[in-house]
Structures are given as C-alpha cells and as structure tokens.
Image (cartoon, rainbow, N blue to C red; front, side, top):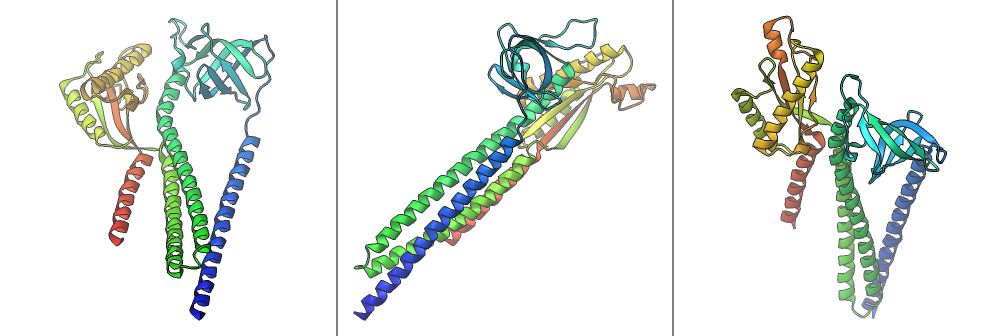
Length: 374
C-alpha cells in the first residue's frame, strides 16, 4: 500500500512538470507574435505617403521604380512621394537621348525594372494613379538598373527560402506542443500502471529536451541565413583577364579565345558567380565612334562565352562600353594605345553564396557527429 502511494506522488510531480512546460511555450509564442505585430506597425508608420493626382489632368512625374506588378508600376520621386503608374497598349517607352543627331532607342515593357529612374507623361486616373502615355529614361540609367536587377534577384530568392523555413519551424513547435498535451492526458489515466506511466514521462522529458535542442539549432541556422542574405549582393573578384584588340577591330584573336576558355572553366566551378564585362577603346578616333567600338568589343566577348561555353545570359552583368574613358595606358604612345584597346572580364562571386556552401558542409559534419553518438 505504501509503495502505491509513493508511485502516485511521483506521477503527480511528473504531470505538474509537464503542465508547467506547456504554458511556458505558449507564452513564448505570444511574445514572439507581439514583437512581429509591433515591427509591422513601426514599418507601416514609416511608409512613404502616396501623392495626390487629379483625375483627368495632364501629369508629368519622375521617380525611381520601387515595385512592379504586371502592368502596374510604383515610382518614388525625390520628395519620397509615391505614384502608381498604369501601362497600356498605347504607352510609348523610349530613350531620353542626349545626342540630337541620332534617333532615340525604343524599349518594351520588360525594360522597366526596379531601380530605374523614369519620366512619365500621362493623365491622372484618380487617387495617386497616372495612366502612362509616354515613358522616357536614359540609356546609362537603364544599364545601371539592369545590372542591379541581376544582383537583387538572388537576394529575393534567399529571403523567400528564409520565410519558408520560419513557417516550418512554427508548425513543428505547434505539433510538439500538441504531443505534450497528449502525454499529459496519458499520465493522468496511468495510475494503475506505474511502470508504463514512468516510461511515458521519461519519453516526454526526452522529447522536450530534444525539442529545445532542435529549436536552438533552428535559431542558429536562421541567424546564419540572415548573415548570408546580407552578403548576397556583396561580391568579391575571383579572377580577371584583359582581352586586347587591333585598331578599329572587335574580333577576338586566338589568344583572346584561349584566355576566355580558361576563365569560363574557372567560373563554372564557382558558386553564385556572375561575369562582369567592360569594353574600352584608345583615343585614335572620334569619341562617339570609340564608345560604339568599345560596346562591340564587349558584346563580342559575351557572345563567345554564351555560344562556346553555355554561360547563361543571366550570369553576365549587362556589358558596357566606356569608350576612351578609364585608359589603362598613355594614349600618346603606341604601347599605351595598345593597352587601351581592351575588354576587362572578371569573375565575381557572391560572399553570401560562399558562406552558404561553408555552412552546409559544417551542418553535414554536425549531423554525422550526432548520428554516431546515437
């Protein structure tokens, strides 16, 4: 009889411990939700105020594209006011050219990417919305924003992956909380089986410890992901080559092709790489001609990499021709002009992707160690 009383006292102590753990986990979850709500409220108060546009009135606004959803754009001007811009079948998209002696380039709607500074002419459609009739932007701004877009896309992919992992962690915590409640009910009905109840309680305690360990590991991984996301658009140069050309030529020599073959082979062995291509020219001819010649040289390098090494175009930052700018040598000497007739090709690797690879290897080592201990 006395042994039965002792066993009952032990069961009461185990159940009381389990009941204490469940509210604690629920309180932690409520605190987390409250912090998320406060962060959302703070973000909402800092959002830029929309601009007021009169319906039916001719409008001319300019700003940088901060968001795009199908045929709708959101732009922000220098005063931080935001406008919604509707694209229609009649909207004209063309270059805001600086050279009056040539026709302006015509673009399609795919050219309107985030980070591009544009000028919009159209009519107000109510609230802060403008129906665009004509959109203009400079070719320099387009080149810069296109390069920025190619670097931002990987960042967004990593952020989406982070959100998915957070959701999975929350679902796992809820599932484990439900299991603990079920184990508490089993303990309450196990008075007639002291041995079975003790085994159930031991299992519950072990699962709680395992859950705490998993939550700690999850937090470590999320912190690592945050660090990698912050480094995704930070690149370091792995290798670079200078491809030289003959006077007034944009044709690759055999030596240049060999250089590009070696660089492409190295690039394919890197994680998260992009290739930067910049064309240059000597000061032998007119400035405009040299700018066009440098662009042709840069495009020749890009075409060779794509056609002969199957390098994806999205891996190549939009090539740019600098013309006579940024000379590598003295244009008054023959040797200097030879150095200036060049294309600089560089392999850039995302620091975030490099740290991601290292973290994956460390995680595999930790997993192997845990399995061996078990």
